[in-house]
Length: 217
Ligand code: DX5
Ligand code: ZN
Image (cartoon, rainbow, N blue to C red; front, side, top):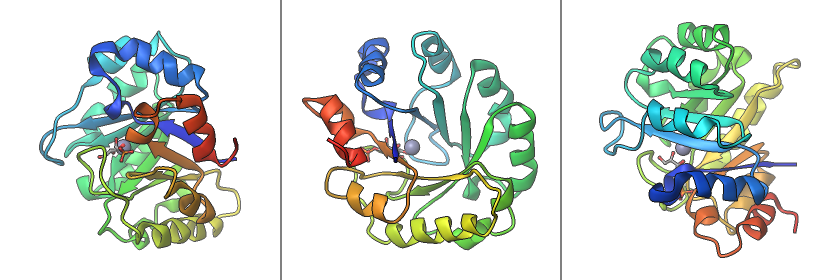
């Protein structure tokens, strides 16, 4: 069954601890954490100290999505905090292989994210080493944007690329504009994890929303 990773970006920042408890109790599988630096994307969010403070308040695995120009600088910090997936952008470094090895050597799972205009083929020679391919279905930087339909084809391509490696446990995650309308398309394309910010945090009934996004009510 597909997993749901609510994005903290759409939470009430004045009540983060409660908000995270709420999605944990309402059935979320992971907590998606968007780190933005104001350089790679035109927005700033929160940094490691905030994430560290939240670690002791939830059992949800941390799914950290770094939208920063220098992801190499944060490997140790997020490993120390206790991070399940450390995902950086392919567009942010010429040294994807080195960084992936470093992430794994620090005990985390390694993910690479692709902007809407970056082809899946860019991951051809690193796919075997990955734990996650993150397909951005909006341009990174903000929550609440509309899903880019072409992303569906990219999810299928990412699944096909991973299927080539029989022993891989790597998953495909989709991030941006996932809601009740687009989730079925993304699931059908083979996605393993759906990120949903505004859909989950904006729902009156978060439990029902999470189950609906999974396709099970
Ligand atoms: C966008 C972030 C997303 C964002 C998704 O740059 O990576 O995780 O929070 O928000 P929604 O689900 O509202 O599109
Ligand atoms: Zn994200």
